[in-house]
Image: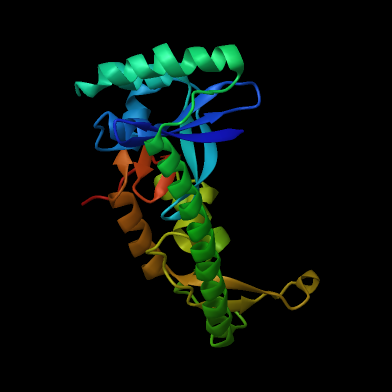
Length: 254
């Protein structure tokens, strides 16, 4: 796939052309340009096409961002109340898309603004990669230090739960998938710290250990995560830190 950043009236619009010459617009860029305050909610309400994502560097690191086909891009345009929406529609459908269909790519020479944007994006990508590598290294160093000081039990304390038990509980309580539980416990900025480790008593485990979390800390963390989520449909929700929708069947009472 080929990523090309374009400048539309000073706003960065990234367009990805796949191996078949089909253009995909970065949904967040389109939503920001068209004045949608919550891009995830806007795409959830207006976009009807198959959800497609593409890995892109962001200030928060590498993320799989949703990209939009022509139909969903048009749906966001017609539902926008901004005057710029009509001009943006003309640019997309009268200039960009016809050229891509003829040549397989958008070959118009970039304006000085687009050239500066492309150069800046390249510099940002390098800086983000370096920063992400440094953060990952520091995280590993902290992890090694934490593990060296972690309490290890022969049996799981009654006030703690393993990852497997937590996934079972969150699926039953909120309908959350294992992937969302993994995110909350291991990636989310407000993740609860593990309480310690337990030696695996099974003979075939060969002395391995597994992490456990305090039940009260887990409950508090998922209460916060769910309370910060926005219901898009009766069973689908979004969260400011989680990319895309996820299943949520019951919100924690406020």
